[in-house]
Image (cartoon, rainbow, N blue to C red; front, top):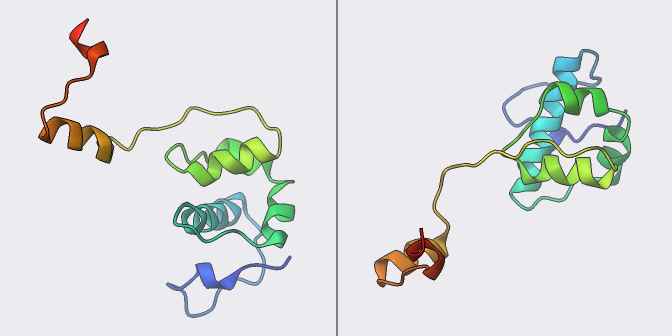
Length: 107
């Protein structure tokens, strides 16, 4: 197992293997976190995760676009996506500038 040790900046000695489901879930979260911020996963991670559906199912990351990308890439069923609750930039700009969504006027 070739792990990306760069995702373990908080540990003096990154793990050399992932044994428990919790270890695997931690690694998935770290890789997805990096991917969510624009650091594309290594080819080895894509290969590794292909056999970890049970980890993805047991420890979902509903707020991670990367998590959903992995699920989609492997052809696994989609899971519920979370909402981070933040307002998109375009909506904030519309509100500041007084633009109203015509669909909201009908409600």
